[in-house]
Length: 266
Image (cartoon, rainbow, N blue to C red; front, side, top):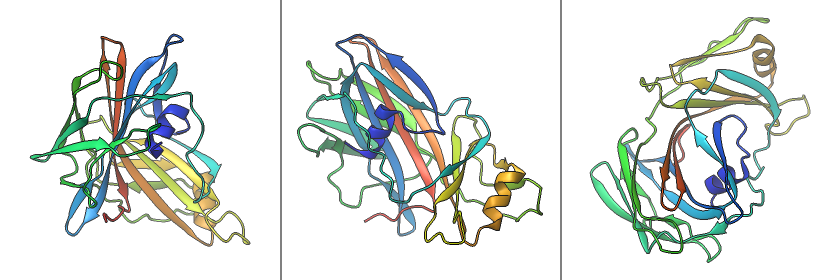
């Protein structure tokens, strides 16, 4: 199961807003997918991965109404998004058509029989421009996910401005390049060594912000991050598309992200 699929079905993402559905014993077909950015030379590529399942309950990612909030939590760089689900894998046809930035590519089933994730066969991924709209065409299967055409917008590239460390007892401000339309959300992880004997990042200030270009970290939390012997910041812009197919009642949730720092494409 792909990491994004496990996250959505197990509802383990703490910061993101979610819309939950619960259906009957037979369950509903759902599709969940990730569209992530990677650097390639002076441009970017993406490696879309979409899986289809039948579930009796699921929580979907949305970026509407995400509040400005921060909380303290443990952090582990080796933690897994695992978590079992009762999902039954479904087919959505022989292949999917993925269109972005003037390109048309196909996504094919690449995983084992129990997890038929559709993805590109291109090792380096699909070249694209973050922020461009995308279209996913699903041919459908009579015993699986129904046919449909789904449109969304990929997350735009951004940078985070250098942070001015605050004086003791005062909040900390972080600024970034805003998307400008109010339909995306920002998630930031301020990682730090929690004790003098820590040998890796083991604590974090986890924040969600409306994507308006600025966020504030409360003084008590900022103080812990600033005082640490080693600290850094991971940031992510997210856009989420959630669509419904009426016959049979089905849902598809495609999440596009741009991470800072940005992973490098193969």
